[in-house]
Length: 121
Image 1 (cartoon, rainbow, N blue to C red):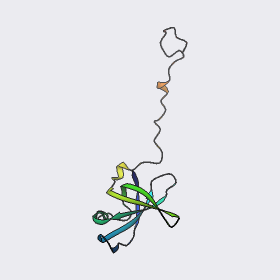
Image 2 (cartoon, helix red, strand yellow):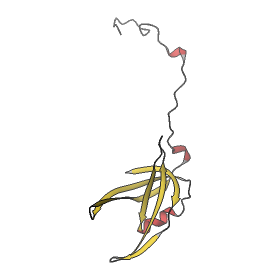
Image 3 (spheres, helix red, strand yellow):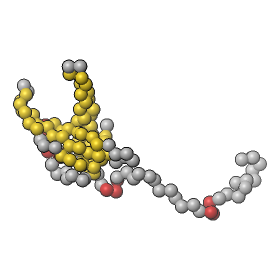
Image 4 (cartoon, helix red, strand yellow):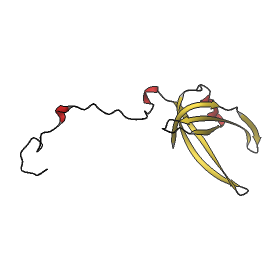
């Protein structure tokens, strides 16, 4: 699954020690490029954290993500993890509404469609 948006905040890196060794995690917030934008918190784990370093706040990005939920003590927690992030060109940013081509009176067909093949439409 992919999500596109503008990077609005990088949160601090978190590190810790688990039974499988040390770990590192960094979360970041993007604002989607929709008519009604939404903010989404996405996390990076392990060596993927370095992929966020060259990206600046305000850049348009595309993130390939996995969404996973888990239950703990009767409550459900959802995690949005990115496995690839890349910056988007400004030219590939989706627009809010497509342009309508201008009306040309020469495109109007005369009654009957301009040909006389005997069909009523």
